[in-house]
Amino acid sequence: MINLSKPLEDAFFTSQDQKLIEDLRAMRKMKETKDILARISGIKNEAILDKLVSLKVRPETLASLCVVPLVEVAWADGTIDPKEQKAILSAADKMGFKQGDIDYNLIKQWMAHKPADELLTAWIHYIQGLCEQLSSQEKSGLQSEIMGHAKTIAEASGGIMGTGIGDKISKSEKEMLAKLNAAFK
Image 1 (cartoon, rainbow, N blue to C red):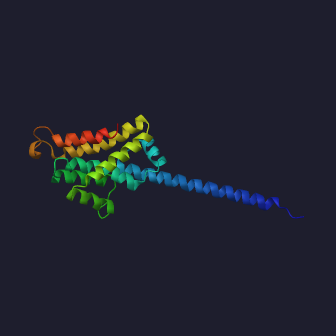
Image 2: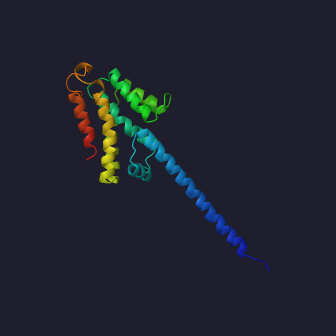
Image 3: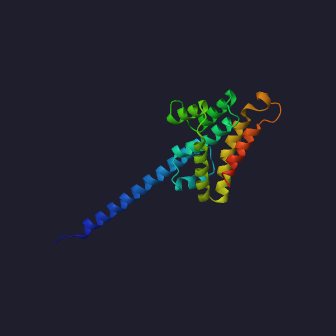
């Protein structure tokens, strides 16, 4: 008599093993994505990173999310000075952008030529949509991270004609910071 239960049992466990292997791969991919998101954004809050991963925010998308406010603040007064360029490239380096990468070249392009207004509009819509998915605490953490980077750029030239005398942030940069900040409401 042929024992049919053994092949069925083997097939069941093979199927179960395959499911476990797939789950393990998915968990590893989520961890890798989370690590990359943390590196490029500077976000350290695990809850925000988990939420971004669950919303399928890709590192490439978040890279733009992190850089747009920096570039917009730097261009707020009509020009980007060398100190602002240096601050943007330093922030980009900390976020994991490497010279020669497409994203790095895009940042350099945005510094050389002011991006179209549609870029800021797209960023505002993106951040508003993202914030709808976040808890108030997660939204606050994301806002703090992004606005902190943007304020650093605004303060890079500092003062009257870059002297450090007077208000470190120009009126136009303050207006841009307010506009960026309002996107989180």
